[in-house]
Picture 1: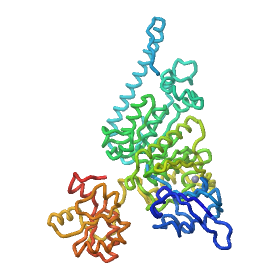
Picture 2 (picture 1 turned 180 degrees about the horizontal axis):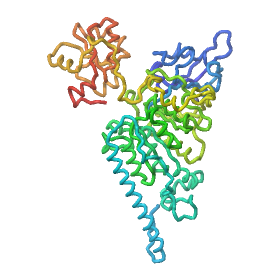
Picture 3 (picture 1 turned 90 degrees about the vertical axis):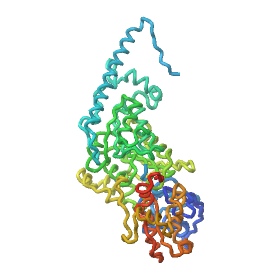
Picture 4 (picture 1 turned 180 degrees about the vertical axis):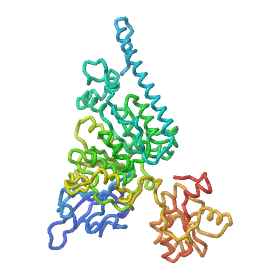
Length: 100
Length: 467
Ligand SMILES: [Zn+2]
């Protein structure tokens, strides 16, 4: 499944070469015909995160202070970890900023 | 162009008399204002760490002085107001009604820094009735690249004083209240309660939780902006069904995720952009026009020139502060320890110094200077990131950033050749982590230089650049 991922608010620093935008192909787990946010998070952790994974993941979800957006919509409105993803979805992970 | 025509024919002498009367009245008001400020100067010289509210500086705007005394209706704008605000009065969506509401509104700007600068300037210029400004800091030269309300003449002076003077220089008809000092749970209720709209232009996590909680308790809309590096974020909390900060972030992030402008850097125009939009949202709410950015968040990425506006969750019924079953009271708010809750300080000045190492593994900057003076054979390892090393460094220091240290250990080993090893960074925190790692990897002679390059500049060479 082809997805576009974007990391911001400093989360990109945890990835290889600090790139914000990623076009990725995520494969469904065997026997499953869908990809959920839960699957995507473990895929990101295994394939994109280069350092300090605890700054991205806590338990089976994202760490506190990270907003997750599926097609520009808060994932809380789409089912959180159980949200089912579709081809060409855009998922944004953004760390909240406090500076000023 | 908008040149004012001076009519000199006899038929308009009445008009001239009227104008003279009006100007005299204005002059009197200005003189009153000057003497009030002069007396404030004499009474507020003792600076307390927490903002005090002066009894004569409450944000009441009921004197009606901004309205025309002899106009056809009590709500009519004065001639001066019509002229000053003509370009926004011409907007059908804003108009006289918007201006009238704006001039009767009271907006609190918390933080007179990178975000608060454009906020306060635009609120003053557009004619908000009363602007309160809270800040406990003084103006520093390294603020001026982004905190555009301040000027060189105010370096060393309180930011609220500088900001209030700038607002007055722009528009002497708006009331500006100076709340000198840090906003704290003990004074926040009393200050915030005097205003209709609150703008969070602070730079730290505990203040953001505190201000949001305070706005929930007092039922005030909160225009919240943040900027760091080349990114900015903006939303309106606690307004028209939108969530509060705690609905979105019930648990604070780990303190390692709380970067500051003084550590990570910020391009001045980025908080400028977000601050301008905060002013816009505050004006929209105060004048009751348009659609506020509540329930939505604006994400700004300056480097790629991208703006994204996303839909947020609504108010959470389970929220411990604004939820249905919340019993969060004013008393609890006043007792809440926000710095402990977030494990993060409200002010840069109260940042705790890291202490990871035994004394035997550390030396002072003066002791290091003696090492240099005696020409003792040694290696000076600078563990800051490469881009910081490029800003300034001590001669003969070797740069291996902490993030690369582990994989560069063989190189370091061959360089050392039994000489002693001193480790330095900007302020003496990263260097301690580095020395800890070096000890674990067998480099037992590694010693941390306490206070880093900042103490070199303070104690040894005052000409050494500080950033
Ligand atoms: Zn809430």
